[in-house]
Image (cartoon, rainbow, N blue to C red; front, top):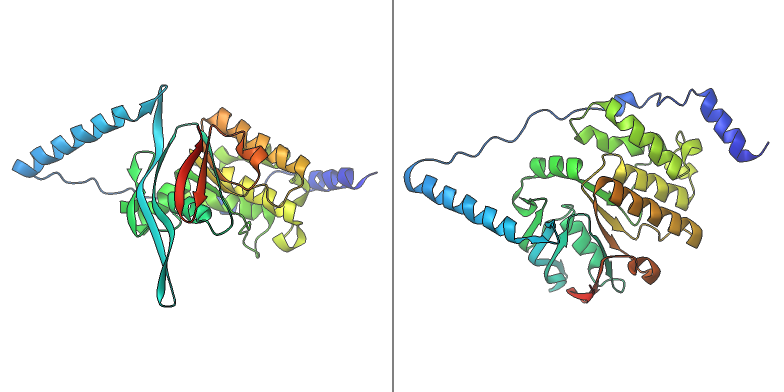
Amino acid sequence: MNEQNKGNQQEESRGFNLDGASEFFGRIAGSESAKKLGTGRKMVAAIQEEAREREEEAKKEKHGRRVYLECTDVVKQYKQYDSVVTAVNRATFSVLENEFVAIIGASGSGKSTLLHLCAGLDRPNAGTIRVGGHVITNLDADALGRFRGENIGMIFQNHNLLPQFTAMENILIPTLMCSKPGSEYEGTFRQLISSLRIADRLHHLPSELSGGQQQRVAIARALINSPRVVFADEPTGNLDRANADEVLELLLHTREALGQTLIMVTHDMSIAERADRIFRMENGVLSLMKS
């Protein structure tokens, strides 16, 4: 009997019924307070502003699809000793719903920084980032955390798995940020671990997994909430060609099935060529390379 069959039998002996997962399912109660319009001129101004926003949203359509991500004059700077480094220099671009966009560039060009800004993991020094109609640069930490948990999936270059939790627990942790009952995740969970071939590694700690297995767990974690947009930072960087192609096909299949928007940073031009559009990042400046 080969090792894979042994692993499958071991999972069956455990019952493979997500034992231990339920304690990781939770809900976040509460909602943001409604904004008060006020009276008189303030109310008129608010109504006019709302009408302008609706008009702008109507303009932001192309081929029947709305703009899902929009960055306008985004700047990110870091202080380094006595100088200031501009990692992202007035980046302006938009991404449509269900579009696949690739961002390429040399190491240190600012592409990962831009990705983290768009995903709400960092704050820009200037500029506006709108995701799904929400200006995330205006949200406070709690509101941004809820929004990210319910709408955004992030695949990190270095996995960022929590070392004290098993693979299964790492995958399920993002569900704590959503208000859906735990039972709604079971089908997605089973599909992901089957597609990514990690069913026999669920009860292992990250230190007991290979680099490729850790990346597969990180991808499952990013997709468990069925997010509207997925940001992927070199998701195939630690995989061989065959496994990299399989992971890309999974991301593309999920994108089509769920209508997701996919924004990926990659050094692999064979992957970038599969994108609808390619942007290049160079010294913090973003430019369109292929449309």
